[in-house]
Image (cartoon, rainbow, N blue to C red; front, top):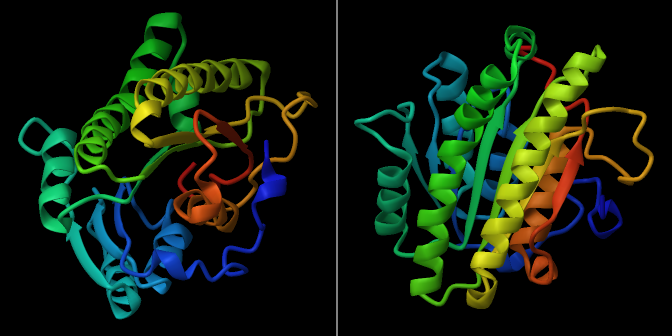
Length: 250
């Protein structure tokens, strides 16, 4: 969807205006968001990153990002009652002074798709995947509005390609919930020049109406850069399709 406005090469555009941009990323792991974080770091953005992963690979990634980013703060704890999404967003706003861009990441695994068997379990899955990013979005958007920032927020939910009609149905319900959330939040903050968009899993390859898909991490990184730049200031309330991005850990 709307891929014609975005280069498929994340390094194609320089976006010099992103140097010094204050960027918050949640849900980063070594299986989702690596290219996205590197793209902002390479443009000298100031990064506040939340990750639940503690691994040698994450240590290496953090060092790589710190080498090019304008500034980097890593919070390596999962969201919990003690470390809520709201508290993290507030801490990021305080640490960065203001927020220019937020990217929230979450991933559906094949095991999670296989586990759900009824509508209640699907609703629980949707809540588990979307509640934290909605919370962060609301806090960040409110902060952007209070500071008169022309900010952008991108919520990214990726998943494996469906292997059955059942998988496609679950992914379709997740995407519908994400689309409804995106429309609601984008409308709520449209008067404050806060733009809110999303990337969701494409439920089926038989849908010919949605246009081109994001098919890799560099695609998502390119989209995030575009939306954070001056060129993306007219886009809000959109859900972009992603297919075939989630491969590892599924």
